[in-house]
Amino acid sequence: MPELPEVETTRRGIEPHIQGCRVLALAVHEPRLRWRVEAEMPAQVAGQAVQGVRRRAKYLLIDLERGSLLLHLGMSGSLRVMPAATPRLTHDHFDLQLDSGNTLRFNDPRRFGSLHYLTEDPAQHPLLRKLAPEPLDDAFDAAYLHRVTRKRRVAIKLLIMNSHLVVGVGNIYASEALFRAGVRPGRAAKSLTREECARLVKAIRAVLAMAIRFGGTTLRDYVGADGKPGYFRRKLYVYERGGEPCRRCATPIRHLVHSQRSTYYCPQCQA
DNA sequence: ATGGGCACCTGGCTGC
DNA sequence: TGCAGCCAGGTGCCCA
Image 1 (tube, rainbow, N blue to C red):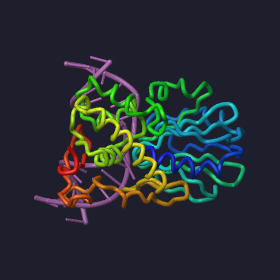
Image 2 (image 1 turned 90 degrees about the vertical axis):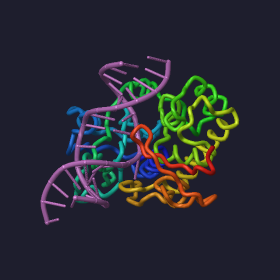
Image 3 (image 1 turned 60 degrees about the vertical axis):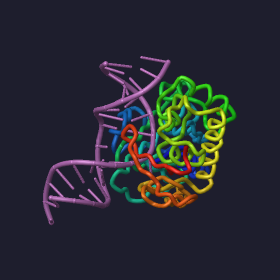
Image 4 (image 1 turned 135 degrees about the vertical axis):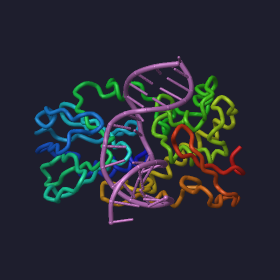
């Protein structure tokens, strides 16, 4: 599911409901997530107050008084705030029960999500340490993208999905950004001109920022903290539109598979 | 260093 | 109806 806009939407949705609350209990119903949830975690976090919620790439960091919960939604995960008494559904894997009477509930059918508790500097954690700049930060600019693409012959779509080079861009927004930049997804990264790098950086920033404004994209599972879907799907130019007319030039959108991931582009608008 | 492929899971859909 | 096969928003790890 979630790329950067969906994770950011989740962050904005949960923070006002959990900040300042105290953790009554962490109830783990299914510890077998991507990595097994440690058995000691509930005892470690109980009693601590929530200080805030941050996002780094597609990870959420729930800051407590003596550490942070590090959470990933994987492909199909979602986090919702609800009254603690709400009956659990299939795939509800843990609850962070708060003294407000609400619970932060994690649901994830495919269990690709994860939960860690960190007491050291989160930036030094192995999962976060090697992450590239945030696409919405100033460090991600045309000069940067031009520099890191120079010796790479991988497809540009794969490159912008590589979290060592830029974070937060997943399969949907990679296709969408490349459409907006007028660049074909299969082009070797090093073949992009400086101008194309500049257009692509601008397109990545614009598509992510706009998707955040619309609450993200819901294709199947994704819901925000309030249970509502994201509304960016209707703004998509190419993703899941194979065979349909391009919204700009009416040429049928092409669908192919690159490295086992579906890719969409307009053969007319993208060079 | 780079790149390719697989692994981890469940569920929904398609077609026989 | 049943079942096999394929696909899905991510990403760490192993191998060449």
